[in-house]
Image (cartoon, rainbow, N blue to C red; front, side, top):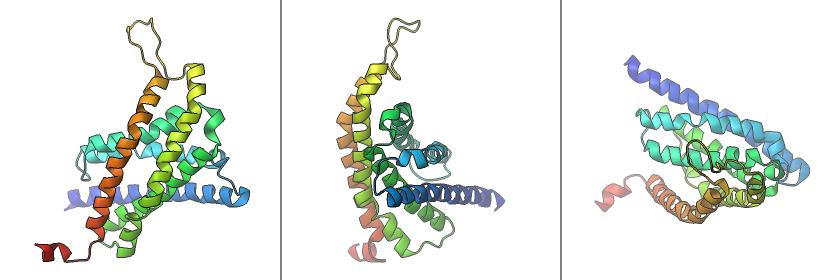
Length: 223
């Protein structure tokens, strides 16, 4: 009994903490947008907090790997790595793009997504998830996911000239390992497959939405 309670308590604490963190980020983002009437400059007011809670979300890979939650750890890793690559590898390394509107749109979409996702997880853990929260969880992604992806891609596009000029994240030859890696080329290749990956996940989320929001008992009636 105790062994079952402890993982549940840990997951509840994790989700509540992440909700609080992203709500903090969202407050500062919205306050900045309301004050300046612009998406520019949001990284300066919320970037550090976003980086912290995005880094902490790496725990979700471990949660899936050890069976604390359902889902594939590979999928969790890919989702975390994709966002982290943009946040840490690109935006964090190129000050010139940090306070652009593209980054602002990206951060705002992320924060709005997370303040609906984590409460839904927490409410399900305690068995008290209202239908309205499920509706928000599986509806908010419809506008937020495209906005976030476009913000990510545009941020990468704006940063590419600076990354290439400075040789950021690249490993040139010759070196002791006899291994070369060109980060700008990697980013361009990633941007080419982004639309396909985006469409697959977006379609999956719509299928999940139909499943989660269908009226109670409708599946049984079809059978």
